[in-house]
Length: 153
Image 1: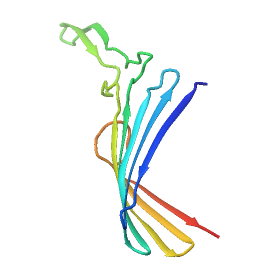
Image 2: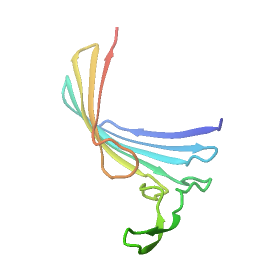
Image 3: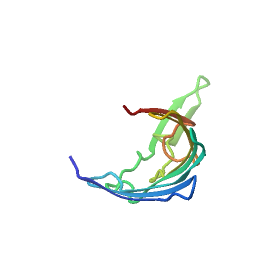
């Protein structure tokens, strides 16, 4: 195994019914995985005693991507001779790529989340969000819904 350390700083405030927040994390990894910086910026806006609107932007930045020198496979050179039915011989010489994955070494992601916090009863909290990508880096779904329930007793 390898060591992983996360350093996080959280800033938040409350200005009446408006609650902005900013979170920043540095993830230091051992081995060949890249170190990362993750940033959250957003706010909660209380609309009513039982309803809060939530908005966040989340960015993930890979710093020293693939320190071990990971690279996609190189092209392969293929040569061959083929004889046609007419007796003519064709010579083929071609470079073939072994992958169609773009050769990016970093997959910085940027996402936004919009949602609500519902508090229909004093001891029940329901959270619902939709998260969607703002860029086309990395492996991300088009929309990610989340729902959470919290009950205090």
